[in-house]
Length: 194
Image (cartoon, rainbow, N blue to C red):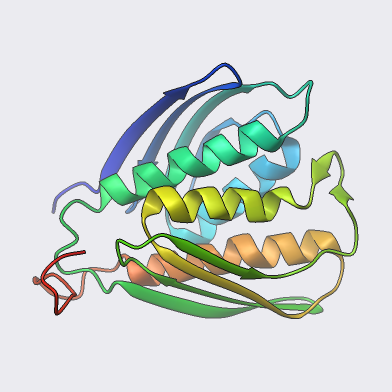
């Protein structure tokens, strides 16, 4: 079996990210984003997706977490896309309804070659610890763009902000896990290209 993995490096005046991603992984994450709550979400993402992530990140956290969260999303999405190679045999689509106690989130993905995030979820607080809750959307928008995938995230029921974020990351992990399954040999597109 071909190893579905990729490394991505990104250096700007705001961040320096080095990331390794494996689609068929151990479910573990090594390293840190420098943002405690984002690390918690990435650990959940790997565990529930069966992915593997190694991350080294330095960012301008003295400003805030925006650049770091966005650039990690960009790098993770790019590595995700690269790891899937020519995409032959992919299931391509994945969706899940994710309960997280009182919160209910719908996540769906199409590994389509067309980037788009359609996000309808809200938070009862502006922060979870030191993490700005608006960065959940920023992260997934960056991921969708560089993964060249269409992603829908919808909140059906809400509770505390931590559970909303957790439901989104767990739900996306499960949806992506379904979408990357190898279920055939041909490219899953009538157009002949993704």
